[in-house]
Length: 230
Image (tube, rainbow, N blue to C red; front, top):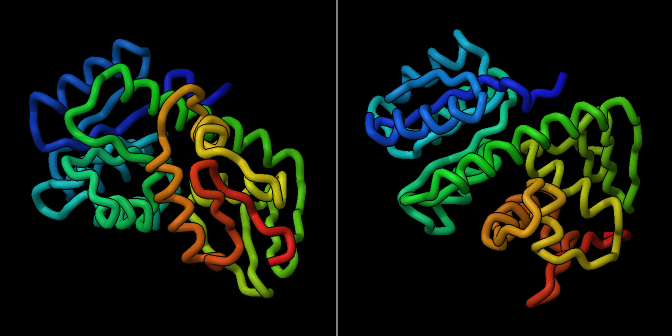
């Protein structure tokens, strides 16, 4: 059975009207939803209910969404969609750095939120399928083990978030080939036809910080390519 069907989602939002509106919409889509309104409550609910995905507001009482994300990802990796009132790149990179997979800027449309949730859950299903097809890719001193979801650079293992790993895996499948931002967004985030260029750019920047800036080549106005012999 796929994770997407009847998935449990934890909604963390301190504004009651937004929290309830999101909860009602997701329940209407067939998801099981649990709610939290502050940082400590979010971590507690995560431990008690073991959600398949977390919708996480950045600004929360107690401690903020970034700290919540750090704590829950340390306990058990799970897809996290951040909700933020700011779209500053530095803020976005902080969220990605603590393990968020994607973000939505407030105010957002419920239709878009539901689409992002569905795409993230489908990625979980695809990752489970991939685990049954062991493949290891060596590109210079970069090694990517798709089944184990592990990466090494010059014999040193590098920790990547789930989204960073999926992005690297997508680039490594066609080394040297330039992939457009739109193609990467459709393949990695599972949402074709959507504009997610800033999301892709932010994740590429985070990925470069971990595997080396020279390994991912930018083709301005087009997209990115993984250098096969970097």
